[in-house]
Image (cartoon, rainbow, N blue to C red):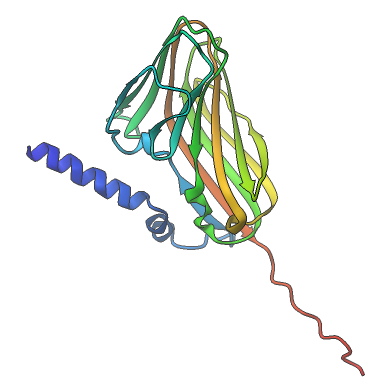
Length: 223
């Protein structure tokens, strides 16, 4: 009973520290470069799920508050498991996708990263992804970022590799968080017939260099 209460307290503290407003305080406001910065990690790596084991998840099923599972398989056997990683330096949990007799060509996690939009500034943006995954030798791994302004979607590919720690970044010349209605990270795997995929570490950093203020030039000064 006492251990359960302690675990619950730790989970609550982790959730509070992970909130954008707490992250802003910990980061000390503006970085030296003058850019506004936010860091985000999916909840499946930080907080325990109510259902840590999902057998045969449906296409589009929510795994936690910010992550959904997608696949175009038909008769395959698929399991999604959240596993504690007490000795891992960067994550409290890992997310494992086990599959067998796979008859599709896609397994995907779509992560809602709108928490990054609390930078509240428009300007030139840099989005950096640090991720560690493990999957079979013949399992291709791709990633991209997609965002929506009004009804128009834009996307950029992220250069990643499995079975190692990958760091990738993209730059967006004009980015206004106030106008962005959706910001998603897509992790896409093209697996072989049988195996497992594990996401062990993931962090997203959004830096926005505010646009310089436009100084109005008085007209008809010399009249």
